[in-house]
Length: 207
Image 1 (cartoon, rainbow, N blue to C red):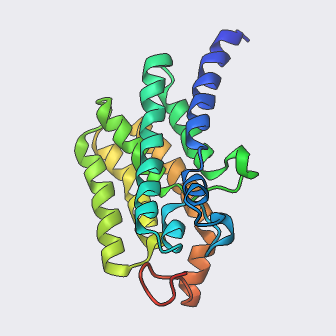
Image 2: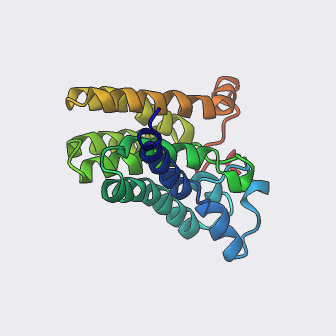
């Protein structure tokens, strides 16, 4: 097998992974003296758990940076590995969920997933309404239920269909894979939802 055929996709994946694996939540909480995020609340490194520190600004910054790293992964890949952008997208998603620096204990992937969709929109591979649907479902469901997990899973559930309607069946399959992995990462949330013990954002159970 020609090594060049393997090298480019592998490098694209690794570049995406390196960006996706940056644990912004952990870094920001440490730098600001908010403690080790992994010992707070659920122990998750995402923005929802950062919010449990009481630092809304840090939570917003974590959310934004987790989105940006997904978009940045596609931007870098479009310059260095234009034929293997989806490998970079997969790398960024897996990097966020399983960062080697944190012994593979990462986030749930909702924000980085959105960043990847934005990246595809910026590159012209998807219509902007696909990103708008994801954002609308994410924010709208959160506002209605106050369950961060339900909001993220709802947005992830319908994204493959949106990509398919947009005419990108290849991305629909990629997003389906993302969605299945995202649901797997939320399995504890699903158990708590069924038990009625899932924390609500801003609610008395939160934290």
